[in-house]
Image (cartoon, rainbow, N blue to C red; front, side, top):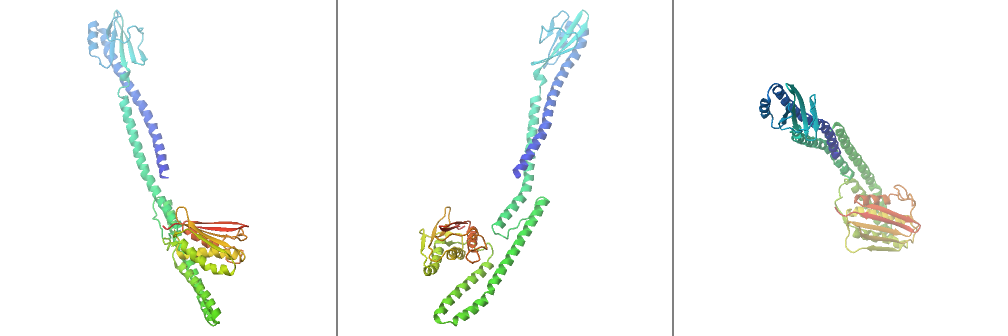
Length: 415
């Protein structure tokens, strides 16, 4: 925008300067020519009385006092020339005549006297007709250039004052889009831009309020589960030892999940984005956890991970939840005995890719949409994984067919 405003002012100023300078340059040329011709006519008026009344010697003496810039000559009545004529063979006119040529302009004035007609010939060279024109044109061109530079400088400052508030607005919008809800802009610039800045600040505040209210509601809802969990623990402790340990372990796992939900709800949007984890270690730990259930259902599990740690820009808890969601989908959408594989490999540009493949019947078209599931679940598993990947600067890809499903979790590198 700043460049467009500057170019617009440059074009407008150039047109105005041309509209002024071209006529001025033409006027300068005409004035110089008129000044030189007036000097030639003044010589004619100076010589006419002497030529008409004086004798030959008086005319010769008068020619000595003429301007050195002009070539002045007199053709006497006996056709002899006095002075420095430019064209001795020219036809003598009967009336005052102006003869123009590339070399200059001749002013020819017949003068009647006793014994015949004399002719005064004043030649104005082309250099005199254009004397001072080039210098004046250079001055005009320099003036036009200075005015153009000044106009561009003023236009640049004006454009900067207009575009800086818009740039600040864009920067604030980008910060808000990246999750920094504390970003605010200072209203500046034209009144319309100030209104937009005020509205953006109000919108950012409203988003923060709504998000805080939503997180508080999620935390309160999760907190309500503590009471039935406590009752469930008390009931489990009354069971026989074999069942009691198994149910207590499940209750502990569920309690831990509720605590994680509360912790996640209390965490601000940008908190933890700078932390990371080792994707290889987290995936190995979660696959080991799910391998117990896989063994009970007769599922073959294969894990392949490149050697060495694979740091990613995702907290370990978030990455574990995303991997659990992907593995949970395998158990939810494939029959028992279906094999699956998990690959962890480096990603081009840093980070890692986690690929979960199964040999099941494939997912339906709406299984990847939030809130849809063919297995009786909430349908949030893939959406959780997708949001985790996007928060790290990556993405989620799903390839499904009748021969199985491959879900690729792309995770960005640590910042």
